Image 1 (tube, rainbow, N blue to C red):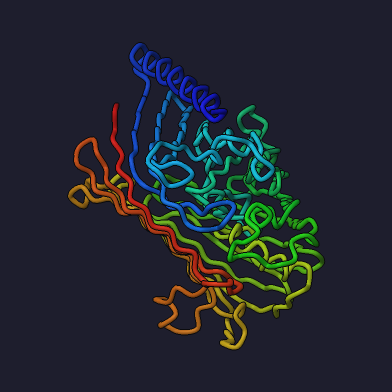
Image 2 (image 1 turned 60 degrees about the horizontal axis):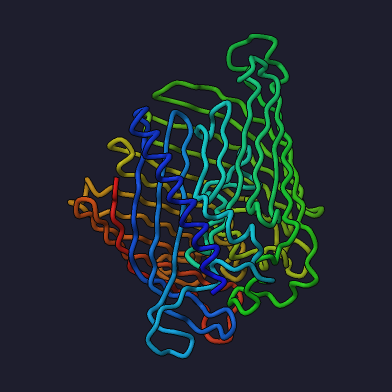
Length: 453
C-alpha cells in the first residue's frame, strides 16, 4: 500500500493549488481554468514489454496573471483488475514510485506542465515544463526541439530562459539558455550575444547581433538506457560520449514593424571537427505570414539543425554520424519555410522543406526533408479541433510523401460539446533501424476532458 502515500500527497497538493488559485482568481480577476480528462491509454509493461491498457484520469489546472502562467498535469492511470487479472482496483505504480529507471525528479518534476513568464522574443522570457519549440539564435544548431515526444508514457520537464540587456537599458549583451530535461541534465545549451555597434546610434546597423552558441548532449542514449528494448535502439549505447556542437552567428534585423519584418543572418557551426554554414533571410508579411529561406554549405558528416523536432527519436542515428561510425557526404543545399496564422490564431500552419541542390536517390541524407504542423480551433469547424504534425525524411519522389517510412506523425482530433471535449489521438514514429518485430511504433488513444472552470 506504499503507493497511496505519494498519491495522497499529490492530490493534497493539487487541492491546495486549486483552492489558492480559485481564491486568487475570484479576488483579483485572474485567469483560472481547470480541465478534467477521462480516457484510456496503452503503455508498454516495463518488464515484459507487452502493451497494457489503462484507464486514465487527468487534472489540468491553469492559473494566469499578467505575464505569468502556471499549469499542472496530474495523471492517474488505473485498472479494475489486480496483478492476477481478477476483479479489483490497481494503480500503475511506475508513475509514482521512484526506481532505478526513473528517479524522484524524473517522476515528479513533470507534474508541472509548465511555469511560464513572457513569450519567446521578450526581453525576459522563461518557461519550465513540456516545451515543443526550443530555439537558440538562428536555429542552425537547435530549432523546434521537443521534449514531449514520449507522451503519454513519459513526460519530461525542461527549461528555456532568455534575458536581453535591453531590459536594463543595456542593449549590448543578452543570453538564451535551454535544458531539455531538468531531471537528467543530458541536453543543454546556451547562446550569448552582443550588439557591438549599438553605440553608433545608426538605424538598422546598430541592431546587428554577434552571437556564440554551444549545445551539448551529455548522454546521447539517455532514452535508450531507460527503454533498452525500444525499436529505436542502436545497440552501442554504452560507448556513447558527449555530443558537443558550437557555432558563431550574425543577425541583422532590417525591418521591425507590426505588419512587416525582415532579418538577415548567417551561421558557421562545428560538429566534432566537421563544419557547415548558412546564409539566410526571414521574417513576417502582413502580420500573419511567416517566411524564411537559406543557402547552406555542409561539410562531410555535418548535420544541419542537429537538435531538431524529432531529435530524441533519432539520437542514436545522429550520434553514429557524429562519431564517424556512419559517413554522409556534404552538399550545397537550400532551406525554405512558410507559415501563417489567421482568425486570431484560431488556425495556423507551418511547413519547411530542405535538401541539396543536386539530390541523390542512392544516398538517404542527400534527399529533401519536409516538416509541417497544423492547428484549427473548434470554433471554425463546428466544434471539431485539429492538431497535427508531420516530419518526413529522405524524400525521393512524390510517392514518398504518403509513405510512413522515415516519418514521425502525430495527430489529435477533438470534438467540443460545450464544456466537454472528446479527442482521438494518433502517434506514429518510424524506427531508423529495423526492430525485432516492427519498424513502426504506433500509439492511439481516446480521451474525454471536461472543463470545470
